[in-house]
Amino acid sequence: MIDSLRCDLGVPPRKASGSRFPLQILGGFVPQPPVGFPLQSLTRAFLLLSICLAGCDQNIPFEKSGWQKKFDGDYPNRDAMVRDLMDHHKLTGLTTRAITELLGEEDRVELVERPKAEGRNYMTYQVLEDFGWDIDPVHTKYLVLEFNQDSVVTKVDLLEWKKP
Picture 1 (spheres, helix red, strand yellow):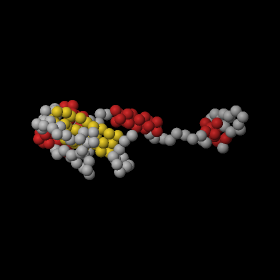
Picture 2: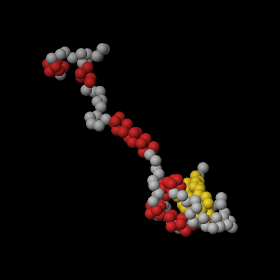
Picture 3: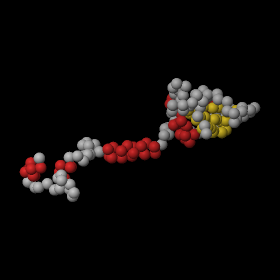
Picture 4: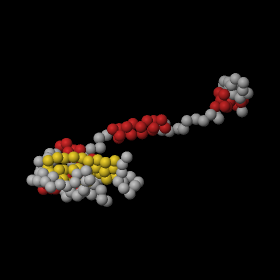
């Protein structure tokens, strides 16, 4: 076999120091990288895509039908729309009727932090309710609109709670 290598290459094979075998023969036992798309490039592409997606803004513009869309007891678009709603739509000064026309019927959640009192009431809209793997919520978010005795919105808040 060694003689055939010498003949095929025209050069005598080199021997590793302290070895009886030529390097060309030992080279066949060394694992070679797979042919095809390099794994390092795929890993880099995945890492870059992950960074881009994590840095993307999850907010979307408020849209009435998207806000009111309900699926399986949840409002899938509200969490992404609430920031735009609060920043770009003047809710303060609107009547409760105008709010109901814009956002739909309230979710009528009684907030422990804000008991309804004479002349100072509020409307609540569920923005997010995440149960995780529990039967009790682990993260909730509500849009709270306080209004005066004339049924005019005086304050807009976003109440968020996360289980410690």
